Length: 175
Image 1 (tube, helix red, strand yellow):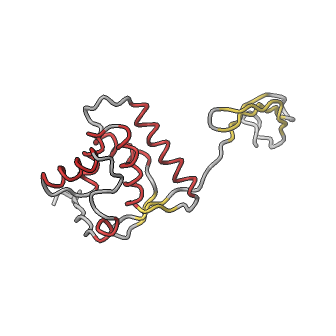
Image 2 (tube, rainbow, N blue to C red; image 1 turned 45 degrees about the vertical axis):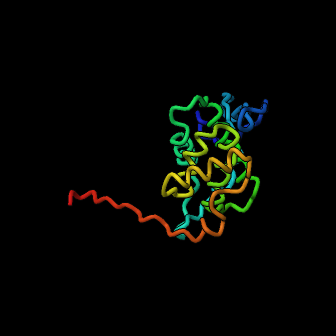
């Protein structure tokens, strides 16, 4: 660790304490005698998401929260509950340890937690996730929700065989 004042690499740790997301260390430079603080944090490997269309992209917590936020729009759900839901999913993904998750599994994790949090948010997310085509899809999902059935509207095989949505492309060169 370089001293921020004199750039010498020789320093000693005078104090270590647990911090919210790691360890805080108080150091003293052995050359100039000045003190400085460092923070150590565990860095977990980046999570990857296998998309339905075969692409793989880095897991984005912001994208996860954005999808949950859309489902929870105008619902009496505190921000801390949404953040906790995202934390719970991210922690579970890290605990799985594979570093790669299928997008359908990620969607099912969100649905499972939204079902317990808010039925309307659950139905909104399910309507996008399962690509509802009409009122019958909503009615069938609402019926299974009322009956407490954990089974999704579509079987996992049906979800995986579903054709990927066409990606919208926009040209930025004004054409």
